[in-house]
Image 1 (cartoon, rainbow, N blue to C red):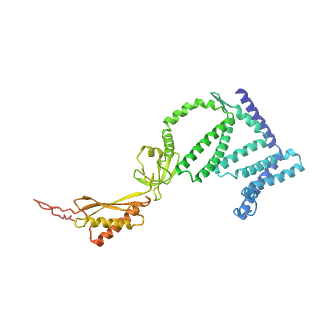
Image 2 (cartoon, rainbow, N blue to C red; image 1 turned 30 degrees about the vertical axis):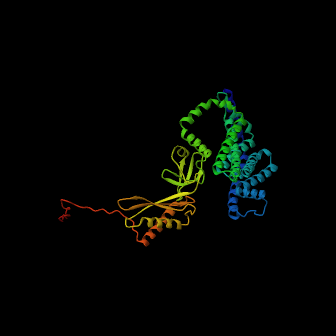
Image 3 (tube, rainbow, N blue to C red; image 1 turned 120 degrees about the vertical axis):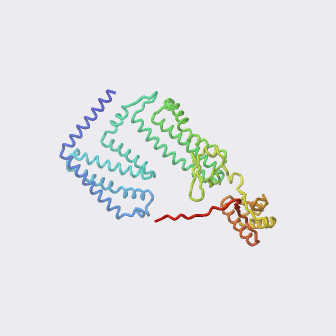
Length: 438
């Protein structure tokens, strides 16, 4: 470690001497002034280009690669103008004086070209954070390579190490592993999205099997990507066995709910007890399953709300699945009449009213029975079958309204509670008014 520290101090001193010698030269200030002038011209040019160029119609008739290149150049107009101005200044000074007197312009021109190349490459990415991360990292690597300090920086990052078991952990190793993991995860995302589109387009698979296959493929590709990335940077995976016990304890204590929901989600997909599109009732919430995720399912209530139910609740609690094996749904309507009505006529009217509804199944005709002679009147139960449970509350309301109109035509009354209060051996309290003096 002492030798590494000595090398680092020598590197710092050598760099300081080089910078000091460069700054003390009058040509440095000329180059610096030209760079500032190029930056000002580039800023003004970018404003003019953005005001006069329509990005949507730019190069519409050109081939796709040329159209893409043109749009990237227009979006990076300031960098392009800055690089062009610096290259012209470097060319003029190179032929007018010694090449070493335009070294700073050469470095600025190469950095500008590197940034344009990076912008062109990263323009195919869609994630804004990934674009910024890749662009800044690649530009720093290019800058170190241009000024000739890349190998020195790599050696410096590899000189500081922490040994954990059989693993030698250095800043360079962490950077390499992070970069490879980022590339592997990006490729994994593209591959899994392609596989998901292919699986979802297959009509031979049920929705639950499609979701299960997509999850298995994503998890498998993610594990393969991590193993390949760590192996590519020279990390022996057996050296990570030291941490497996701690990870297991962390999963068992801190992540037990997450693991339970994950395992429950796999069970739900495997046994097909619920699947996307099913109409379910969970507690007081009823709706259709719109999505099945790793940790939860999303139940759309139909009124703009979506209930996110953990997978564990579906395994351990009672769930009503209206469309599990059969979508046919029985609707029950309870009502009552007074004792003056003919119960057979009431049942006949109820059945005719239910049959008249357009959603009532004709293969399973409605039925009406007398269930109770209650204190306030007779109670009946009307049942009818629907081909699909969607909107059964609306069907129930339509049938009850039609039944009310039929009762009014036939003079059948619906009972309502009547209470009589009798006072014996006393008198009702007399209301008194108290006047408050002013």
